[in-house]
Structure formats: structure tokens, C-alpha cells
Image 1 (cartoon, rainbow, N blue to C red):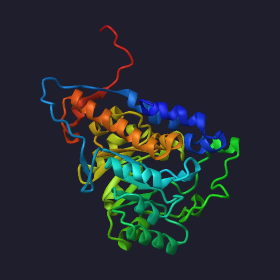
Image 2: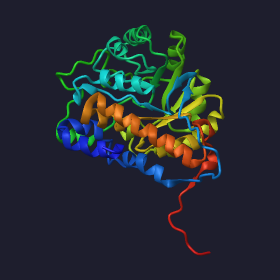
Image 3: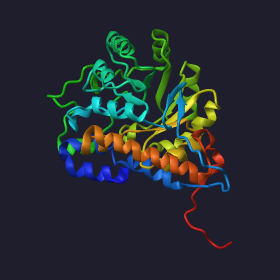
Image 4: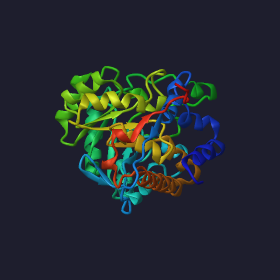
Length: 344
């Protein structure tokens, strides 16, 4: 395995298709799923030369928390379907790499078990359930386990139509899989911006709003108390035909105008993809499928190796771009890719 794409191919070969469909597939015709990856190919780099890059560092901060690189582990659900240790394995690998892990509400391990796996920085992803008391209990348990921020997912009032799952008979959730906190079908479809204010008022942790794709919603998120905005289309698994994460990023960054940190996910396969996201205004990028594939192939060691590969690619890309840190990557370092160069 010398890059993330090798893990993607190997995971598809290794895992039962009736299970892997859940991790690999998207909604509808999977237009957005493909667009998430393709979007990075529409930008090319503009490297600067004769810059002293003898000392390149990948470290940065997210909401004030130091991390080893501007790439984190996005929340992905039901990890014990592909590895016996599940989220514990991913947490150990992320902690060893010094990067941030965001744990899904649909975790198969408790927050206490994950906390015992390593002392790395952790956020937890939250669905607001129909039972608000259970939502508050979930927040309290995560706080007790040392999580440093809440990532409220807002793009799932209903579960998208995932036709690979339907064709192969995947049951969501599988009847024999224990989920300590919730399943998707307990999510509240009545969620509004007032509920974001309610979450904000009920806990002191920083609040990240995940699932934003438009300038209008970015402005509302800031207005209603978000400490950061996470651009995401849920990995192409919700409304098919929406913008790729990278394509939606610039208008959200423009709307937020430096008042909040902005993150993006969807389609990350290379360290260069992370650098393009930084150039378009993201503070950091997050990847889910890349690490799900690595977990499926080789458990904790696979996730650790994928993180190492991507960090090395980020470091090399910074140096070749003419930057010594993620903070130096700017809009001037990328330009749209032309389909071809034609004579005037």
C-alpha cells in the first residue's frame, strides 16, 4: 500500500460486498459521490520558487487545539462492521499520529472505551434525536470522556436513498450490531436553527455545524452560535446532485469572512487535495472513506499507515509549493484547471 487509492481498492476486494456497500456507496445515481473526488482535479497548483523550504512543518490548530496536520478523521459510522476493534483502533491510530478524530453518534464503542484508547484530540459528532433527553445524556457522556467540541450534523432530517444498500440487502443498522447511543432512524426531522441555539445553551463546548453547502446557511450558522462551519454533503450519501464539498467551499469561506474556522470533507485521497482545500480557504480537511478503507484492510495499523502517507504527502506538497506551514497556503497557490490549451 503506497497511497490511499491502494487501500480503497484493497478494501473493496476484502470486505463482503453486502457490508462494504454501506461504506463505499452514495445516494441515488451517486453523482455527488463521484463529484467529491473529481472536484480536486479541477484545480491545479501555482508553486512559488526560490523559497527557503528547508524546514517544513505540517502542524496547525483547530479551534485552538494543536494537531499534527490540517487533516482529521471524519466521523464514519459502525466501524466494527469492518474491524473487531472498530472506533478504538481508529482512535489509537489518530492519537499516535497527533491528529484529530471526530467520533460518530453511530459508534459501536462507548465514549469511555474510545477515551481509554488514546489521549489524542477528539470531537464527537451529534445527531439531535427525537428524544431530547437522550441527546443531552449523550452530550454529557461525551464531555465526561474528554471530547473538546461538538460537531452537530444538520444534513440528515431523513436518510438518503442509498441504492447499493437496497440492492445488496444491507440492514441499517444490522440487527446484531450494538450502537450505544442511537441509530439514524432516531434522528429528529424537525430540527431548526432554534434547536442549534438550544444545543448551544445546553453545553459549554465549542460547537461546529456540519453539513453546510451554501452562503445563506453559513451566515445563519454563525448568527446562531456556531464556532466553526464544516462544509459537507455527507460523503454524497444524502441529497444526490448537490455541490461537491470543494466546490461549495469558496462561497462558504466568503460568507464567513474570517469570523469562524471553516472545514471541508468529501473526496480526499491525496495530501495535495488537502492543500487545495487550504488554498480555497479551509482551515483543515477531513476524510472518512480513506480511513474506513484502511481500517478494513489492516485495522489500527492500516489507519496509522494511511495517516502517515497523507501527512508525508502534505509535507512534500508544502515544500514543493513553496510553503513552510499550512498557514502559508493561500488562494494564489491554485487556479482552475483548463480543459485544454487552445491557440488564441
